[in-house]
Amino acid sequence: MQRLGLITAVLSIFTLASVPACNKGKDDGGKANTGQKDGQTPGDADSPAEAEAGEAEAGPAEAEAGAAEAGEAGEAAAEAGAAEAGETSAGETGAAAGEAGETETGGEDPVPALLEQVESLDTDDAEAKQALADALDAGAAKLDAAKAANARGEDLLTKGESERAEAFFTWARDTHNHYADPVYNLAKLAAYAGDLAIAKEHLAELQKRGNKKLMKKVGVEPAFAPLHDDPDVRKIYEQ
Image 1: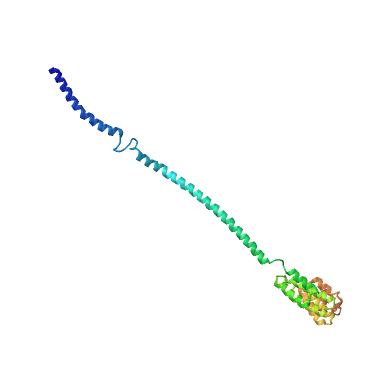
Image 2: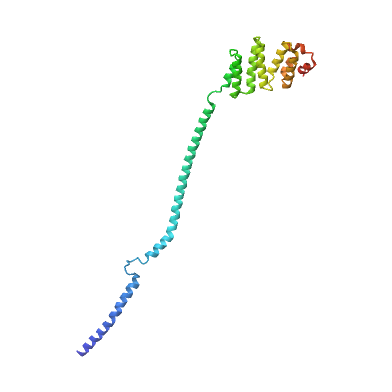
């Protein structure tokens, strides 16, 4: 019995000594093994580091990619808008130019009708002279106007209206400095009228204007027969 009591006492002492160590091991081991802090669940200990790493690696790349895509989309939209705006502006400009052109032209050119009015002997002389002035104001070439006036003068001369014809020959001569036909006609009128000195002056002007065809014609024109032997006149038609 004494022996049994001794063994029981030793076991009790051993047991009491082992309990604090075991409890300490559980406390230390639990915390060491799990690596957890109070109030954490498994896996939370590594979560902040991994999240920061993920944000550091994925965040900037994804942000740059997103910004690039957004920038490309913005540029595409801006280009499309600019193209549409350019087409609209071009269309509006073209339409405005067309309208301006229509306004400026104002329909048909009045010059041909005015010059036709000049040449018609149904038009009186005052109206014909006004039509000549209107034609020049409307942009008629001076040579075209001078030709119309000369044509009217020739038609009047054919009808024996030498005085009326002379006025239009003079207008044509003064309007265009190189047109020779009205000068020739004025010289012929003066020669027929017996004004040989005036005729020579007109022939000298004809020579200046240099129309070789009309200058040759002086030598065969009956109106200039009294002047054919004149040395100055001979120089004109013998060139």
